[in-house]
Image (tube, rainbow, N blue to C red; front, side, top):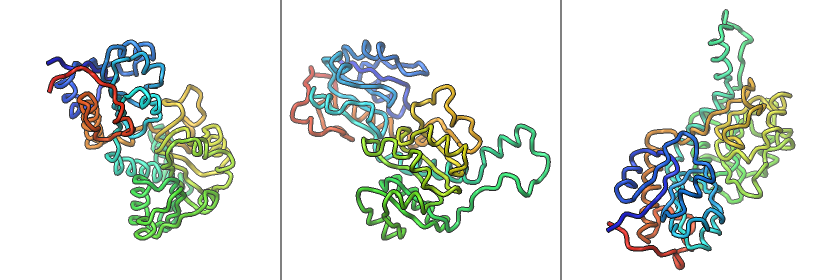
Length: 336
């Protein structure tokens, strides 16, 4: 029997890509940059499946250009790049790759927190540039961590993992802001759920783990930074648009807060001239929180499973819109 045609928008680890190649007639984009919008539209026009990344905007117009499309498998936990109602309306199943990035992302958040707080990147550049002449008693002094207060904005799986690291390893007091109470964090970590303003004012370190939606977009703005301590360290490993970047740059330049560590920006990569890039007290990493062997392989496996299940008309392993089950777009019979 024939193999279903799919488009894969970037090379992903072989742990998933080999499954896709075996089951599907796969057109794989191998360029280092994402396919341009017009190329993506042309590539999916006769496809039944699409394996995408966050870099691809999948809206109603694109879906209409792909009348045979039955499944979109996003190689990411997030799916803000996909118009989910539009996909559901057209009977297209959408999958993502949740649950496999928790530890890797929490590790990255902590790496940024300690690196920014202890000025590690700044001092390393100082040494490499040949400016290190002698031991300096007043040089590169950072923030203490033991016994300080950590503020978690968004106490989901990753937020909890981050809080557990900081509380268990450094005895940090944990405050958190979330729409829902997190009983495990309160019971095991002594975490206290507080209003956003209080978290900003009382925390020595603030780590963002919130979802991106209309209420969280731009929540870290000039007013928020003004409420933080001048010694505060801000970390974002969640979504770039949570932060008003011009406001963060101003806060760092003025000394309103001490330092920041970012694994996400808005947009990605930052535009030329973004004041955060190269700022002495700001670390900007290229969205590498999930960049461990086990995490990226697991993402690839789930993305492949979602894609193949969608092509078979089966439930997806990680299904963003399970409500589409009753009106899924049908396709011709395909191979085993």
